[in-house]
Amino acid sequence: MNIRQVITTAAIFCCLLVGTTNIATAAPLRSFTVQQFNKVFEKFVGLDVRVIGRKSLASTREIGLLHCEVRFKSRRLMEKLSRDVAKVQIDGRVVREGNRYVVYISAVKTLPSDEEEFQLRKRRLNEKSLEGWYELGEWATGQGTFYQDDKMSMLGREAHAQGIAIERAAARGKDAVRLKKLAAKAETYGLLPALQENLLFEAFVLMRDQAKSVADLGVAISEAATELPGSEIPLPQPQPKLRKQYKADPQTSYEGASATQRTLLHRILMSDLILARLQDQLDKNFENGFQIADLIDREIPEFRDLAQEYRDQSLKARTEQVATLSRADILDLQKHYDDQQQPDKGREVVEAWLEHRRNRLDEQDTEGLLNLSEEYVTMLNRPERATDLLLTAAERNPGNERIEAKLGRLGYQLQNGKWRAPRGGDEQDESDIERAMREGRPVLKMTATQLRKAMASEPAKILRIASQGQVDEFWLYGDSTGSQLAVRLSRRDGSPEAKVTAIGQVKLTP
Image (tube, rainbow, N blue to C red):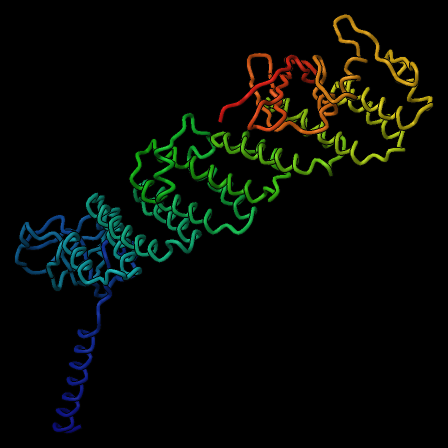
């Protein structure tokens, strides 16, 4: 090979060598945070790397990175870093020296501190960039955890809270499931319990509003019982002011409430959910009003007044249907009135039912009259009404042995074709009352039923006065413009029927 060839070959080789060096120098370095580098440095022996971390020490020959397991040295003197420098970027090659690993520094660059970097990243973020806020939160939280830096941990929570606020705004009024997931996410991020509670409360209010069935409400009730503390405990005292605020704006009232008030609001919301479920099961005509009322008393005693209203509505509805009810239904209805401390109402219902049966009886239905007379005794303890029926039956069916036998057992005697009542110790002779009834006039001790038969018309007006242990009624007959016949009927507690106790004439002034 001649000189020219040698020179040419050498030149080509040098060019190749220089080109290779330039390519190697231009190749991007693998960049690591200290926490990342600690896990992989053994794999990068002989390779150039870039490590970013917080400065722990600095001299003209060495730089220390906080919590890093590898030392960073320089083969030549360096300019010593200022004490104000908190964070650096170091480029260098990883070398193993015995049992230790060293990065020999090739370049050093100062960086903004973590707090400064947080603010820079935050300013560059779009306010509505959900992923951006979560990424910033993850980075800041990671720095805070690794360096045990409370300020960075706080900034991480701030970024996470902003991300949750964006998601919450998107889910508000639409997606209860997403709101509940956000509450769990807030707990994972270590955010304030108050935020988790706000999200859960908002979710359950939305579940209540969006429920389409009893099953939906059942799910909400079951989940609220485990996730809203105090929601299963009835309110010890009525909370009219707090309930009014809740009704006006559930979320605003909750977010402005104290811890104690929040527990009360949990119960108010739960009682709303339970009430909505029970109302969905309530028949339109209140047929199951008593069952629903009993459930209200047991599950949400705060609504006892409403439970009583349902009972009253149920009684009213059933009373209006008295003609269609069976004997068992009537007795059950009477018992309900007795339980509600309204025994007079119960008796009125039974009497209306018996009167309906009486009006429907055929005149020749002796068996029906006999049975009905028994019912007046067994259901109302009204033997005088039973006797009236028997006397009516005797008039319609003279000579009927069963009717005559029953009247005989009651002490009645047949005289000159007329049944005469037995004489009682302090009772007026029944014939006097019968005579007055035939003549169409009232007499003392006449029952209300007998008075109606005697007068053959309803009174123009009835006045009622109730006093302790007694009810007085004044039945007024005649034209209100002139003098009127006034009959007073009195009934004491336990008496089967009111009786005439006074008769007179009155003139009412307009």
